Image 1 (cartoon, helix red, strand yellow):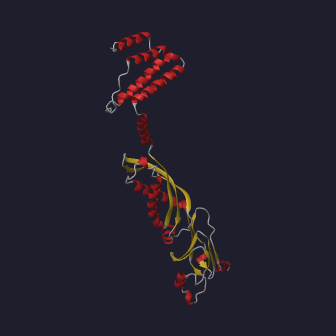
Image 2 (tube, rainbow, N blue to C red; image 1 turned 180 degrees about the vertical axis):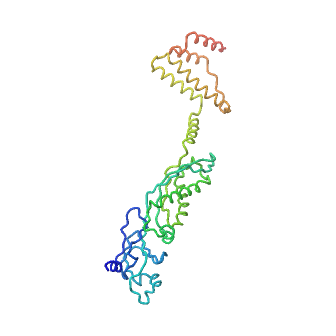
Image 3 (spheres, rainbow, N blue to C red; image 1 turned 30 degrees about the vertical axis):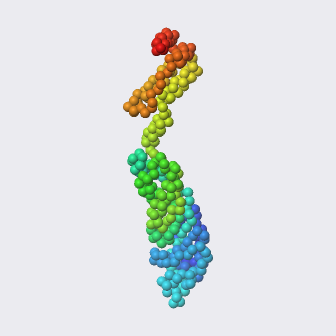
Length: 328
C-alpha cells in the first residue's frame, strides 16, 4: 500500500547537479508524476519530458507547475483536455547546459601534414578546449538514449578523437608553414575550433573554445632542424675559426701547463676550422677574395707567438726571412 501511495504523490522534481554531470534521468517509481507537481529548473539546466523515448516537452530555467497549461504536448498525447487528472507516466531528464571548461586534448600519434617549406611533416599538438550542450534533441537521441546519466568523463575519448581529426583537416592544406605556426597560433586555434564545432554538432554539442598551446615536431626531426639552425648561426667560417683559436689560447693559458698547451689549442682550433671549410668546399663561395696581409704586420703577430711560446725561434726566423723577401 505504501509503495502505491509513494509513486502517486511525486510532486517535487529538481536536480542538484555535481561537477562533471551532463545528464540525469529522474528515478521515479513506475515513472508516475502527480498532476500539478512542482518542477524546479536551475540556471544552466534544462528539463526534458520524454514520451515513449521521444522528446515531448522542454522546460528552461524557472519554477514550473506541471498541469495541462504547461505540458501542451503531453496534454495532447494523454488527452488531459478531456478531464484526465490522474498521475501521468513520463521520463524526466535533466541536462546541464553550462560550459564545461579546461579539458585537455593532444595527438596520441603525430599527424602527417604537407608543409609548404619542408614537405611532408609529422606534427604533434596539444591544447585545451571547452564545450556545452547546445541542442537538446540530438543530444538526447544520440548520446543519452536509455542511459540513467551521462558524464563528461564518458564523452572525453570521443571528443578528443574528433579534435585530432579536425586538426589534420585544418593543417592538411599546408597554407601556413610550420615555422610560422607560432605567429599564427590564434588563427590556427580558431580554424581548428570551427572544424571541431561541425563534428560536435552531430551530438548536440557546441565547442565553445579551443586553444592550441603547443605544436612540435618529433625529436629526431627537431634535431636535424636544430643542426641547420646552428650552421646558419655560425655564419662566416673564417670568423668562427678565429673565435675558436682565441678561445683555445685563453683556455690553454689558464690551464695546467701554461703556455705549453697553447700550441695544441691552436692546432685543434685550426683543424676544426679546416674540417668545416673542407666539408663545405663543394658550396661555391660568394664572398670576395680576402686582401693579402701586410708582411710587416704578419711578422709582428708571429713574434707575439714566439713570446707566448707557441712558435720556436727557428720557425720564426725562417718565416721572417720568407716574408721579408716579398718586400720590394
